[in-house]
Structure formats: C-alpha cells, structure tokens
Amino acid sequence: MSQARAPGQDKSGGALAENILHFARALRAAGLPIGTGAALDAISAIEVAGVRNRDDFRVTLEAVFVKKREHAAVFDEAFRIFWRRRGFLEQLMTLMSPVDQPANGPGAPVEKPAAAAARVAQALMGKREPEREESAVTYDQSFTVSQEKLLQRKDFAQMSAAEIADALRAIAALDLSGDERRTRRFAPARSGARIDLRRTLRRSMRGGGSFIDLARTAPQVRKPPIVILCDISGSMAEYTRVFLHFFHALTEKRGRVHTFLFGTRLTNVTRALRHKDPDEALAQCSGDVLDWSGGTRIGQCLRQFNRDWSRRVLGQGATVLIFTDGLEREGVSELAREMERLHKSARRLVWLNPLLRFERFEPRAQGVWAMLPHVDEFRAVHNLASVAALAAALSAPRTGGAVDPRMWLKRVG
Image (cartoon, rainbow, N blue to C red):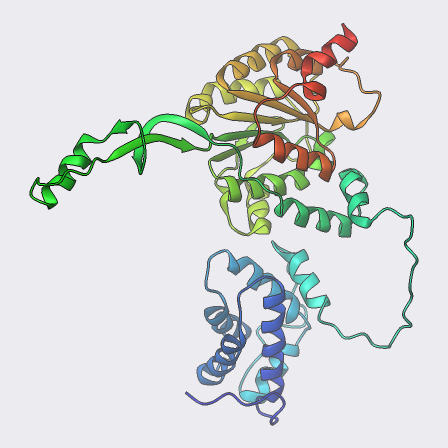
C-alpha cells in the first residue's frame, strides 16, 4: 500500500487528502470515535481503490470510518453536508484520476435532511474559521441568574432551537438508573440465608468430598419494567419530540422500557427507541407512526393497550407513565373504565400532564376528571426541572404531597 502524502503536497492528491482530514475531524466532532490513524487509512484507501464516482468514494470512506451500525446515520448525513457543494468532490477526484466523471448532473435534486442532521451541521459549522476578528465584549453578570438555572425553569414550548439542544443534552446526562426490587427468583450469592444444595454438592466433588463449602443463594434484585404511553396529538406536539429524547435516554440507561405512542391509534415504538443514536431512533419512530399531530382517542387507545399488550409488558411490578393532557371529548365513560383497569394492572401509575404548568389549572375537563381518580401521582412535566424531578421519583418510593391526585380532586369537589 502506498504511503499517504501530507496535505497539500502536490496537485495530484493534496487537496483531496486535506479535505478528507477535515472530514474526519468533523466526524469526530459529531461523536464518531475516529483518530489520526483512521484518517490516514482513509487517504491510503482512496489512493489504492482508485474511485471513479461519488458512490465509490462514499463507500470507501464508510468502510474505514464506520465501525458500528449506529454510526452509519451520522456518517451519511455528514457526507451529504460536507461534500454538498455541486461538483466540488468530482473536481477533487479528477486531480487523482483524470477519467473520473461526475455522478450527479447540474440538475440533480437536493436530498432531504435525514437523521443526525442537526448534530452533524453543528459539528461542521463549529470548525469554520471566523473571517474577521471581532472585538471582545465583556458582560457584568453580578446579581443575575445563571443561564443553567433559567434553562431549568423555562418551558419547552418557549425554547429556541439552541435552548432545545441544550435541554436534550441535559436530559441525556440525567441519572436514570431507577429503583431495584427483590424478586421471587434466587441467584448465587456470597452470603445468604438459603443454601444451594446442588452447587454445594458439585463443589464437594472437586475435593473428593473431604471438604464441603456451602454455596448460598439470595433473592435476585432487578429493576422493574417501565411502560410509557405518550400522547402525540396536535395539542401535545410542542412537547412530544423533547420527551421522546427523554424516553430514548431512559431506554438506553434503564433498560426494560416499553414505549407506546397514541393519537387516534396505538403504535409500539419500543424497538425503534432501542437504537443507540437518538436521531436515528426518532427518525424510525416518525416512520412507524402514521397519526402525528392529529386527533386523540385516549379511551380507545387504552382499551387496545389493555387488550393486546397489558399481559405482555405489565408483569413484575411495572411502573406506567402516561404522558397526555387528558383532553378527551368522546367516550369519557370508556376512558374511566380503561384507566381503572390499567391502574389495577400496574404497580404504580404516574400521569404526566404539561397543563399543570399553569398556576390556575383545575381538573374540570371531562377527560381529566375521568382519569384523575385512577392514578397514583399527578405530575407537571414541561421543563427540565420537572423532568429531573420525574427521574428522581422513578428511583424513589411512592410519595404523596403535591403530586397526590386526591389534592386536585378536593379542589373541584
């Protein structure tokens, strides 16, 4: 294999090699584990392969840079953005191979941004050099509230795109380990009240029975499963995407999380949220769900869940999180009946309602009044502080106080 030349060494490959190095740095900034060795290997692979079109060039770089499946979405979007200048890649490849022909003509359509677009664009833009030096400006922040505290209390519906990105990073950093519960199953342990006769006899056979070392067992400790029912109707659109990031982080760190989205129908997106890359996971959810930002039929969707999924996912003391505003217009009696059935099947039923962000909120709507008697906790969930409180509550025993639904029923009753 020929040795890679230094960037800008000559006219045959210096420009392309330099751009490959910049591309590798952009991928590393976007989260891919790429070092200097991988960048040099990519330059050598391009020289040896002798690519003739854009697809060959992309496949060669992908073979070097992509090591895991979840890295493919980031690489594809970074390649599209980095080499999007029309004819730029073909001109660089022409320097190495005079017979190269552009794969896309001047009238080729622009591809639609896919998963990981925002993260890759931020990584690429962060590498740009400022065209001119700007004078440094200093601010006196005495007696002011820090930006982090403001972000904790700010409503998700009022955040800008940059603040939403900061909030998503804060959600990914939350401690979502969760509580642990003793099960009826036993597992080997160093100390325990129960003797494992089978393991004890096997150990004694090693020494010919002259020495018996008692093997003991203790009850297994496991994290109970979490079942999420998330409303994706039009009234919840401002919060759904942010909380899908929270559900993805919960699935990755906690495990045993089952997520269902409902509007006019129920959709199981558990497998989609198990993707390591959050952008790819949300893109998969968007492809699976057909009723985004539409109407809502909470009662019918809960009936479908209780009929088809409750016995599969509500075992072993599951905790159910239902994320909805409760604005059901039809079938209120069915909603109350299905909520009662769901409450009896779950160890703990927590209702997350963004309408609680209003200080004068009262549960006077028919849907809210039908659901409230059948939940264990009634929590506000509209900013980072409320999400952090929810994460802490999932790791703690059931509490009353301000989240007790009976307090809200007394206000109206």
